[in-house]
Image (cartoon, rainbow, N blue to C red):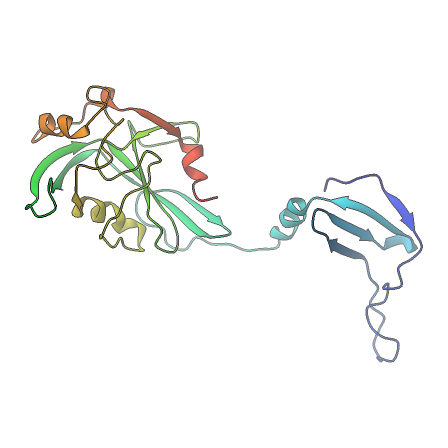
Length: 234
């Protein structure tokens, strides 16, 4: 643990945790932590002299975490990473490049048009408590935190990568999120900055890709590294 210079004090009056009238073996006090608004003070009562120093709350958490046993349970197929945060569990799932059926509703009262569109590989980052998931494109399955992710080349995804869910209720099961994303109705919304060829409207590229077998990976627009996506929601 990081610390400030050690100081010595007389033995603490709290050296014995049990009151003297209790008929039990004395339980000597070894350590005490005082949590203040901006600092944590450790009192070490070993060797008959109390020594006091400042410590890092994060270091304390790391020490205590060594005593925890954690398991992920059964993870969804094609899970890329699993992260436990104070707010809950984040799971990222991978979908290989393929042709998807996309429903595009260009006007509120119009019937959606069905397009058969090739998509690059996609990374869906699923957050806890039914928060909207994120989605990014990738030229290949990510292997390292340094790998580059790209803007998802679809409507209904904000510049941050967060999905605009609209009225679609996304499932809590991360493995079902990709299908729910493509099952939802897309609208001409948030379509800028996702194509090098057509930076103003991804829909113009969609018109060219309808019924094509593969997505042009050289048209993807760089976004973040995998390491950045791992920190979403922190």
